[in-house]
Length: 623
Image (cartoon, rainbow, N blue to C red; front, side, top):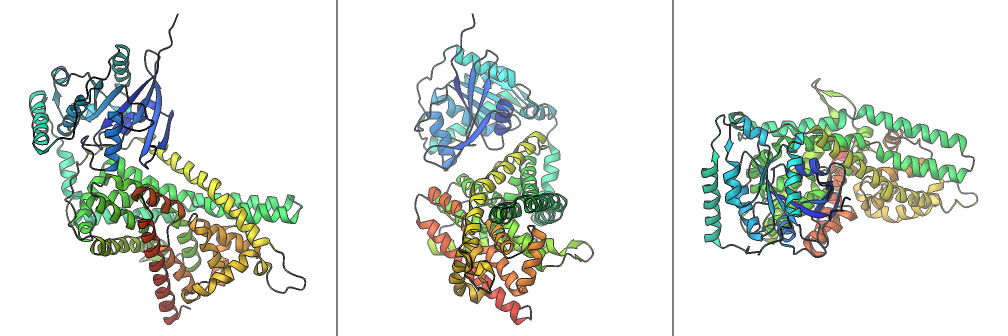
């Protein structure tokens, strides 16, 4: 009779870029969930895998770290999870220390620290195929004896060694290995130097230098890390990325728009009740459809970011930008959080936890929202489509794509300027030197790319359902009620609650050329930026516009001046962050001071930028 085996918890610990997350995906597949640790905003990934013996293993992918000394919030979570200090978290029965087999020096120092914790440990030498191709010879038995832990070789992207790894974990759990005495404590400077020396001794003793060194990486780095050529290549990649966001997505966007136009026509033809028909067609379909149509652009942006990260280029880009960012008061590690903010400021702000210095981290948090997040893409695309002709410049570049690139560049430049000012207002200490281990180049795992893209699509669609859909119903109600009085001659929306709110706000925004419909759009835009487009769609649909983005762009072009349209774009370069982002900033900084500073300076910059653009355009004859 089979006896039910008790489940066990397993923690994955390793250096950044060691393939730890790829190993986690290989172990757990689709049986994983993402949440946050209690009380902090550090992301927590957990999945389930069944061992060869039939035991359920709950695997936790801990944030990457070089040491248990924990110099950043991410590293602190890893340390506390391993030591069993996290409130409400069960300590792991087994720790899997994940190592890049081609670069063992730093991970061996971490493995020595993990042994001091006293928990049973397995060392997983990942990317072992690359080590073999390089002719790297590792004395697995000798190193295992020295560490007092079993060693398993793995190739996570091809799921090699997974069964052996699970068998070793199973053996440790089945043998009843209990946590030994925890002798780890915060090391002093002498102990840190001693740990480095011990790790180097292990490498010299048990690792033979590669017979075929990876000279390809060195040759590629000679170009990609060149101070001039490398920077030109980086800017070229970013330029291609932003051009692609605007041009490659057009067929898919047209298809989505056609579906929602058909749905609007279907409702108009078969729903007899005028009020219900207006709610569904003008409120739900026009509102949500005008946001979902931008899903292809957002997925293209994420595709580039995921590919560059998986290829190993992101760390190189951070090194290239270090000198420029350091001059503006930003730490080199800020590059990756800022690039993540192009997709969404929330994960970008959370990614600042990799920055050790609190001051550098707060500076990065304050400027991260200036990066052009994907929620701005619907606004940019709508206004550019309405006011910028779809023509070629020099027969090569799309003018609309060039304007989009200019808006992105404006966000980047403004972030550098603001960080320069912040450092000189709040603190004047020098930026800490930038040290990062460069990963080897590797081909992205197609399944990992697809899995991440599907996750981003799910998040965006859920956002449309949870946030945008209820807001569209509210906006439809505000735009529909109360009905116009007897004998009213103006448009019905002028007499609605939305019209009243818009007319009340409009005097404040009149100096920057905004009309009352734009004023309405800014209010729900605080919940989610892209709702501004849906709001304009709903407001103008109530006024008689078609339920598609192309028609909405034509409507705006006929109702707004060029100066007004460009001022609206300028506003959104600096627009105050959506409420969820401000909430994340509050949690990351443990108070309302920095969210208040962020909101105040962004409102000020947005108003000033819109004012300057509007009046300059009018003066040049574009009013």
